[in-house]
Image (cartoon, rainbow, N blue to C red; front, side, top):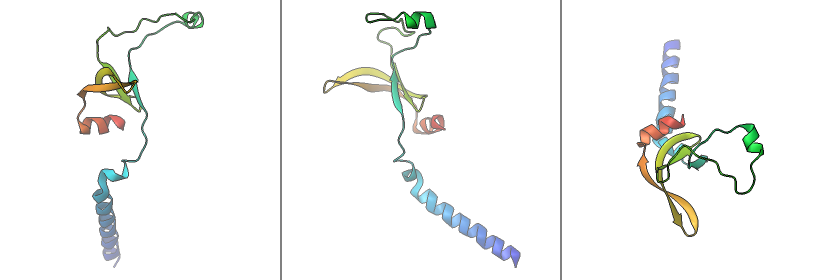
Length: 107
């Protein structure tokens, strides 16, 4: 008798699982993500940071014309070039990880 109840319990779990899988990625589509574009990086001393003023310059680790990095939740998923759209900066993607790679990198 316990084996039958156990099997029914597993069967219900499988049905519930199928319902969740049927909705698939739809469950995740409304989750907000933090998106940022990085021009470059640099390390500086606290002394130099405290001496900064208007007009100060920081040398970055990228050369002019190199692709910018697109991060989602702190993970690199694409690269692209800066564009201006309606007086706002944007990013035209030139190299994008595959959908499975992007999902894997979010985890």
